[in-house]
Length: 158
Image 1 (tube, rainbow, N blue to C red):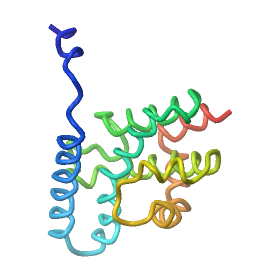
Image 2 (cartoon, rainbow, N blue to C red; image 1 turned 90 degrees about the vertical axis):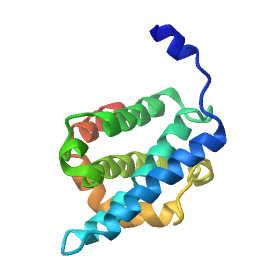
Image 3 (tube, helix red, strand yellow; image 1 turned 90 degrees about the horizontal axis):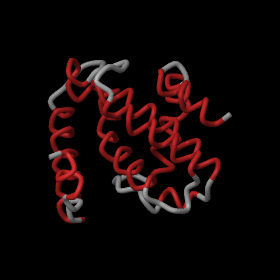
Image 4 (cartoon, rainbow, N blue to C red; image 1 turned 45 degrees about the horizontal axis):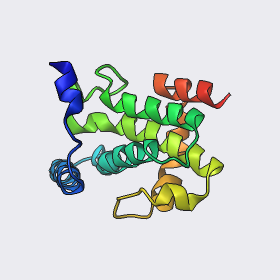
């Protein structure tokens, strides 16, 4: 039964794009409904689908070496981890904030290793990747280095 599932073809590019757009729209509507002090941080949650998409595409890029793909894989797994710093099951979409921090940490590391054109070629966000990363990197790298996935990423870099 499980092998039958593995034999199914991947969703088409259109189906993947539709899923990505729907997820982004749902998170955007959720963020717009929030107010107060925490709403400033929630706007970064909107980048969760963008960074997840970027990490997935980078895993398929043959220009990225296997050591870097191990780091990228750790970031992808962090998105799925049921227990993390801010679990989505408890926090709702706000739980993606720590996932974004981990992804920014990984992407920033990749941008220091590979030509930016390679990384940017997979970016689907509305805002420039370099703009997003530069806004989030300083704070994000401090947070990520304290998270379990951030520590795991550091091990891959040694």
